[in-house]
Image (tube, each protein chain N blue to C red):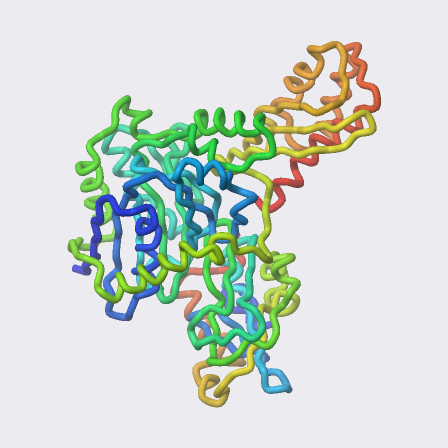
Amino acid sequence: MAKANNCNVPEELMYWVREHVWVRPEEDGTITIGMTDAAQHLAGMVVNATPKKVGRRVKKGRGTGIVESGKWVGPIKSPVNGVITAVNEDVPADPSLLNSDPYGAGWFVRIQPADWETDKTGLVTGAQAVAEYEAFLKEEKIDCGNP
Amino acid sequence: MEKVRVLDMGLVSPLRSQAIYHGVAYAMQPDTPNTIILVGPTDPYVCIGYHQELEKEVDVPYCQEHDLSIYRREVGGGAVYLDKGQVFTQWIFQRGQLPLDLEKRFALYIEPLVQTYQSLGINATLRPINDVHVNGKKIGGTGAAQMGDADVVVGSLMYDFNFDLMARVLKVSSEKMRDKIYQSLNQYITTMTRELGETPDYEAVNQAYLKHCAETLGVELEYGEPTAAELAITEELEARFTSDEWLYQKGGLRQTGAVKIHADVYLVETAYKAPGGLIRSTARLREGRIDDLTLSGDFTMLPAFAVGALEQSLRGVSLDEEQVRARVGEFYGSLQVQSPGVGVADWVTAVLSLKGQMSAH
């Protein structure tokens, strides 16, 4: 898996780097989103996670739910305008999935975007994503290899 | 030189003292200055952490009988009793302007607090990640959150603290637990009043704090007022904060069962049903070791002093199965103890169950 400053950045996913959100377009036109490896590293051990409910409208840049670690509370922001079509029910029951498997079992919500073609232009993927993430993490001196 | 806005709001309603920093954060626009708010509440109240379940954490009937309001903040952590004895120091900064690394962010936020205390002759230091300690005692807590486009860090200047009411407003599993919380707060929390023998002048200390903020951040401070937009959002949030839906929200909320006193000190209570009766273990844990332990329940142990002796023998032991088993074994080996239906294995299980309550910490 590709890495940026020791943070995993799978090249097949899309990213909103500044907000530390990953995005995977699904075949049915929805998108799955979650927090990146760098985000979970920065937050520390997540002790609570509460995704919004299925059916809720979300705006680009607004929270799809809230996560709480020992020292911090914050949203996982939506990269699109749309409606939440599914939430990962395993995450509230075991919030540490966000730490242990942020790109897999720790996915957060699925959204039906209102205008994917427009909103996806702000996202990066592949080698470009790895390079942008690396530049961002270097600037902030963040390294997932450090405890 | 870059400017940081100061909102010195004096005393406001308990609700406003919480809502204001959320309001300023959620109203943040790209041209909003980074802001430091100083504010205190006119009346005492109770504030709970974002994901806490109110009725499990707070003695709501007691608060209602004593006219104590309760508000949920969008910052993590535990329930706290707050009053005029604390001045809240709330930083609301544009995202990207504070260190992304939380340890560094807290270190920056805590630096002016430490300097202010030190200027008063109080030996305050940063206890990473986010405590301020004075000779092993905590002097106020801190928390961080992201709200909209703002990064928020909150804490307080701890002039005074009501230890009795702090212990009283919490919902606890037994009065033994409450006594231990009260003792531990007294032992492990301190205030400016306690350290100095008198309460220092609020205005002078607040000004010293702001001066240290300017130096630490390398900025110029500019006194201001909240904008109309910030106040409008604050008022919207006040409506939300007073709704039962917000206050009593449940679902996906995880409790730890531990009461944190400070970074190294926790109180936990567990119950274990042994064949010979229920064993309730109420313990203070310090750096993973038993600092203080009370064993109660409906088991029988003779002679009468033996329970106290067992409690004493487990002090200082870390919550490790081998160590606990060895200590309990030594106890049974050295005293002629009768405890029908409760054996070494039961004490080991009862004591190690304390560890389970600490899993989220």
